[in-house]
Length: 256
Image 1: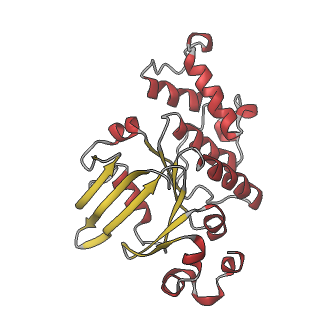
Image 2 (image 1 turned 180 degrees about the horizontal axis):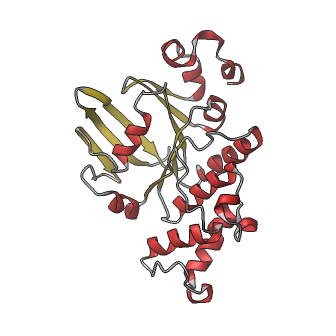
């Protein structure tokens, strides 16, 4: 059984009188792809925001490697090994693929953030940047401006940037959104591969992707957990079908 990296204990987040995240208990294990699914407004992104420190918890705890990090700032969590991507593309569109990743690597290593630093002076930063781009399949596009990348490659670039911090836990928020079928296959393969090296937590509406690459799934509805289990267990759960998947005719179930 894989090692537990991160847990939440009765984690909650309220907006006014509305509990967007309601007493969620989550266990994130190393070298697994775990997905969080649910209808729009279920609290998925809010949950990630609380775990990664972008929103304060209203109650409960976040434990990382058995340490309480509930009140830690975002940058502390990143330094500790918790990284994420966002629903909306968040890259420097006017810079090249190389520079996007290089800046992230420099930031993590604590070096100068001068964008126009000469490459030969960057040493280990260059090596790490090259390794990450090769890892995600973007090395051949290293000199291309980010705004000229296909949408799928822009999302992969976001993943590359998140890898600059050497994460132990990687949260991916809707990585396949807006992708063509070919791009979806590409990013799915990358996520599955990353899941052999680190803990990956995937928030995704594309159920074909979720069912194909997830080891474990948690289903949120109205801020709370209504089901958890393997893809096959989730696919056969009637409460999940009724709350989220549109009843018994949900197409991806036939492939599970």
